[in-house]
Image (cartoon, rainbow, N blue to C red; front, side, top):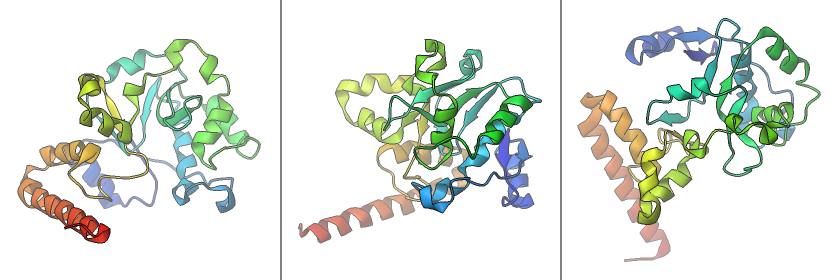
Length: 234
């Protein structure tokens, strides 16, 4: 299932359903109650909308994934984990990252969240800070509620792991890469963790492989040459 807001056009929803196999479900956006003044990033203006996942009462259990995650292996076992469950945040490991969550939705749960939108603090001005305040005891819950990092691995860490032989052996254990901050589709490159995203994309669109890959390499060459020139190198 793919949660979409009205700003995603009907044509785009149809394409997601036919080309990518998603089941789009239209939801209403939730405005950020913090206002622009407390936003750490402008994109947090709409992230509270993901709270709708907690109100999908027709579904017994949800494994929620941010749209900027890439699933590398089967993750069906997450449905066996107790709710609420999430993985530690890369930057604040005593908090959880809201990009991958195991949820048991209910009308009551969503209603409780909705009633606290203006009461709960949020350290980042977005949904993640709110949810960490809503689940303040997450770190002290049974270990089953704390997902391993391999289920929500920051792409910078994944890039480090693939580049260093001493930790390369654990790369095969990674199941979900999370492209927070830099997005491969907005910052085209064929290096680091972005490469695996583009490889997966081109596997699904082989007709684009040749020309698009050449363009990506050309962009990479241009970026490198520009950097060398800026630094005054030869």
